[in-house]
Image (cartoon, rainbow, N blue to C red; front, side):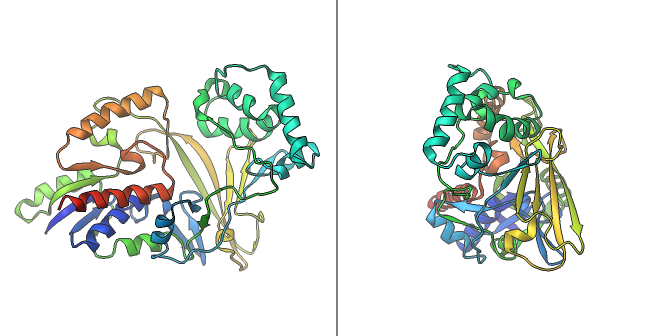
Length: 375
C-alpha cells in the first residue's frame, strides 16, 4: 500500500494530524511502539472507572476553536481542577489563593495576605535570585515556599532547590480571591468515557500498527521488498535525538513512575481527584483518585501514586529539562531535522518542549493546514 504520510506516534498530535489529512482524502499509516493508542492521555477502563494511566490529564484551553474541535469526538463534563496540598498534618488549597493564605496565617482579606507576603519577601533581601530557592522566596516568601514548594519541587526535579536554576520558576501565581479553580482558561473539563475513545475516533480511516518502533518498522518494511508499504512523508513525534541515533549526545528528561491500585469496597478514598504531597520525605508527589474526574459513584475506587524518577534511555520521557545545555543541544538537532527531506518533527518529543493538550491540538491542526496548502 502507498501512503501519503507515515505518522510515527498514535498520541494526540499524530491522531489529530491523521484525522485532518484523512478527511482531506490523504492516506495515512500510523505506527506506535506501545500496545495501545493515545500516548500519555491513554485511559483504561478498570471496573467501570476510567483510569488516567499516565497521570492526570485535565483538558483546559482559552482557544475556542480547539475547544469546539475536541468536543466533536466526546462529550465533556464540567470538571474543575481544584487540587489540595498536604504538608504534614495540614491541608491547603491550590493554587495559592485566599483559602490557602487564610489557613496558613489566619488572615481574611486580600490586603492582610499581601501585607504578610510582602513583609516576608522584604525581610529576605534577595535582589538577584541565584537559584530556584531564592527565586521562589522572592516571589512568595518563606512560609508558602517551605510548606508548598520546596519539598515538592525537589522530588519533581531530583535536586535541592539551591542547585536548580531560577528560570524553572519564572513566576508563581498568587490569587487574592477565594477561588480554587486551578486554571484560568474559560473552557475546562474531562471527556465522558475517557480520552482513548477520542483518539479512536480521530484515527478512523487511518491504517494502524501497534507494538512497533520506527526503526523496527523500517527494518521490517525493507525486508518485505516489493511488498513493502511506501509513503511520501514522515510525521515524526518521537524523541528527536533518538531519531539521529544520539549522534550529538542525549537530551535530558525527568520521568515518572505510576503505582495503580484498585481499592475494592472503598467508595471514596480521598474525596478529591488530585491531592499533592509536598513533604520531601513522602516519595510520591501526588495521589490521583480517578473516579472523581467523572463524578463517579460505585463501591470501588482506583488510586494512582505518582513518583518522579530520573530518566534513562528506555524510560518514558515526560518533562524536558530545558536548561541552557539541553536547549543548545536541541537547537543542533533541530538544524539536522531541517535538513531531513520529507520528515517533519512534531509533538513534545519531536520539539523537545512541554505542551498542554490544547497546544498539541493547535500545533497539529496548523501543520495539517500548512500541508494541505501545498497541494
